[in-house]
Length: 362
Picture 1 (cartoon, rainbow, N blue to C red):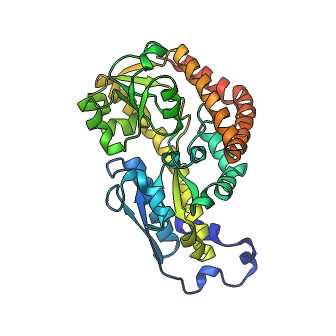
Picture 2: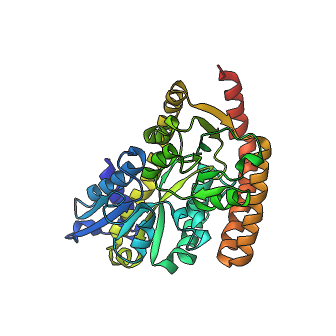
Picture 3: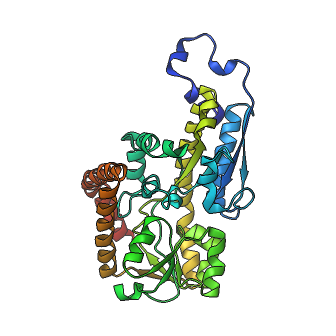
């Protein structure tokens, strides 16, 4: 069975399996959507996720549901994609939910929990523990949109710095391009966070407008050329033990879709998410080797810096929880799952990975 047949089969309601003719055997309705991306074309992993998704939807509907992809700035700027979708300027967007924390801090949770879950745990919470449904019901519906994962980046790096970070004191006054609530944590430690779209990061570093910048990981960072202007490459990116980037759709436009199209849309998004993580896991190792060969200097964040960030992150979560019951409910669930999930991974994945790392170290 090819991919189109798989998506079609997944889209049919369970009750339809007993009918003589499936729903898609009837004349299909023609639907054309626009999707504005927050990520430029040169980032083939990210922009490519949107094109892969659109291709799947088109193939599964025999071309009757088409989604046209637009780069940042072609319709709206990169950081305004969700708002444009909420207002109905476009039917959908591909963006980081965390870009909207200025509207509501709870938008962060669909992307990541700071010092929280890794890629598999985040997907488990969203898909299997009802997290995505809860966020749609309690948060996104209030903003006239619905949201689903569209790609998982895996654990991210800690960013590129023009100077070394040896202590918490070195964070003071640091002009750091960093998105989401992590910027709030660095601000509490004396840094000056900047939220800058991907295409503007390199020139900002080159001109000295910022002192450091985080993006995603080796493959995408290499594409942006950040190693050329900031040599110190830090890890881990504690604010993104994973990065889930989202398909966000206008709620009215989604509800107007035939039921089969709605199911195809969600199924294609889930498939694209898994394919995206596989792509990152395949591309990042060689990209890291190339970066080091080009002069990138790998540095771990000092333990004292990580501890200070962890403590401030915990305080921040508690403060936002006290101010917002939705934030409190989602944070409480994710934190509880984090505790259980890491107890399990400590026995399984961690012991296996640790042995492999020691044994295969060169």
